[in-house]
Image (cartoon, rainbow, N blue to C red; front, side, top):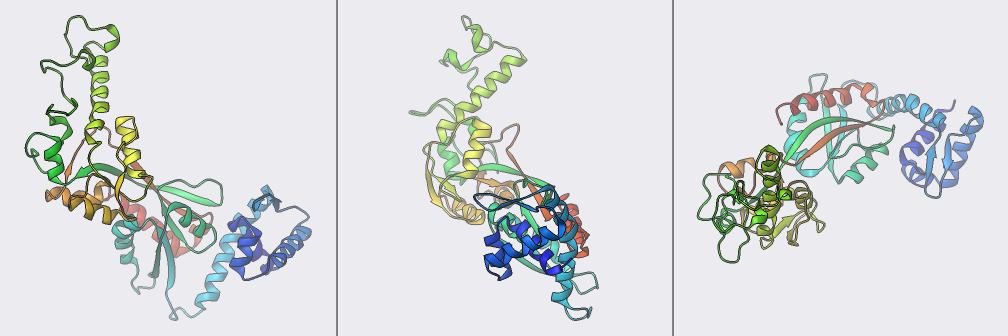
Length: 361
């Protein structure tokens, strides 16, 4: 079987398109189509199903790709680095979101870049999930970090760690929401908001005179059964309603985010308040480190990973506006092309990051 045909086949399998494969190989699309047809005639089986957009591998196509791809990758690496062990280090191409990759993955992997016979050179690139996975499938990256598990058998994903998200703002916003200064660095603020003029009642209003019956005070005469009377079930329902009422107090606080769609704030609101944020984004910057800097400067509230803002919380530059019993989490995955963990430098980096992640959570 011609290795050139196999290389073209694996490239089409990863790219999902004759057109994209042709661009990656530096060939014309008719040449790629011709090579795939030749390979299909040799095998006596169809390898791809032609779709309106791109191609889908058949079962035989998937099996052949999973068997051939790791060996072809190894041959390509030999061709690129040569047979002389001293000529160059193996190179690991890593891709992932800029903040997590820069703050977590790269510092850990740099320990493996020494010239001890097992080290490797390191090249990193940043991108969103779609860009990273497309680059990995096309062979541009060896290892990817993604906040979503990819579908299909071409890529293999392993859970790396969970990232806790925190609702934060500069102290002066906390003071406006609450009564007086925050109690401590990183203290919860929404649980001590008073009913100042024009402000809606928020959390922990039970026991206050003049509260409305809809706020479910335990032990109040005349409450309706549907208002969750006292008892564990009733208390949990009351606490849930209390949390839902805390969102309106934040409507007038500007929002700092990474995108106009407010991905972090919207996810937090849906998880904690069971609603959507009402305030639009005031400052939009495409990097969570920049979001943190703007939040520290007082631009508004933000939802940030705890690992990224822990130092600022400790120093009192920002405070946590809320502390839900179950904080929103996002899981990161280590992703490789299926079969490439047979390559020593990829396997070593993969294992090293999994071990390092034990100290991140």
